[in-house]
Image (tube, rainbow, N blue to C red; front, side, top):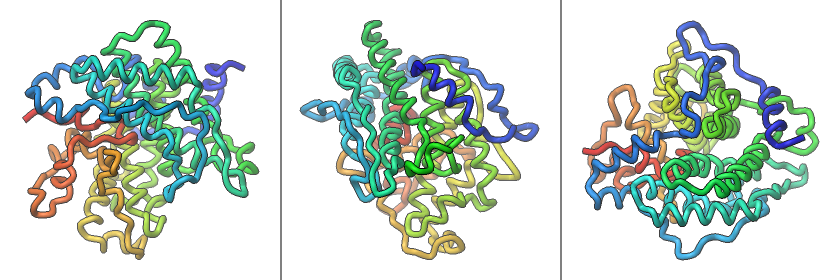
Length: 385
């Protein structure tokens, strides 16, 4: 069975959320209105970036600083770090994300570098050996690592394909490789003993959100409405399960990492909302039983300021490492850039970093770049003054 047919079969087998209530967006009728446009409109965003002065544009959309291109990683394993992720492919993903954004801002050299790197990895069939780990032969962390790559690379490839005009042979090479990796990422997840019977992608947690965001981004890239709709379906399913205070039950139950995973899930929800928005669908204002995405964001930011808000669900001291800029340059709060553009209040209220204001302190470290935000979120979403 071909990869394309297998992918469509998997789509048909996915357990989808119930239809939205009257007045809500109904993803089951969604179409990909702009095939190849993923996350942002390349032409419109490139024009907006020209409104920044040249120095600011270079600051917000810098090319990758790596002196050497990472060799293709064929095998992913897990857990390799405390988080369970295999970091082997992260340098590759960061370079592609940074250089694609720089290309959008007009840097032809960055575009050529990203295209060359993607070609080398595609030609080597990188990330094709996905190892199980642990006594139960579990693939969850390996597929998590693969999904992180795809969440950064698919939107970046869409920018490069639109703005850098790669040759047809290169497009076929990269897009065939992406098709195989997306199919891999959509496999059943968990211990080997239980995977064979999995009919759908499992719980509506951060891992499921990542899986559906990958399918949605790829659906937008290739013009596949069945894949694209999956993001809208999981978004509405997550709203249904959200508590009235905005906490996500499956994430708030994670003890010292309750806020870590609340943030993780929100990052994918914001990305899904952006993927929908650029195709003409509004999830930011979607509301079920009075619950909206804004409530999940407010709960997270409120609990960071007042830890007592989390007390009914987790009493442990929280791991807030996601607030720190990583040595690599990644920032796990990069999703705040698109949220700042779309927040119903008109944007985040930014105080002064010197006062300890969280969002202002984070924005002082721009550009904010992360796979869960789809790339260099500052370059893709920051507003000109």
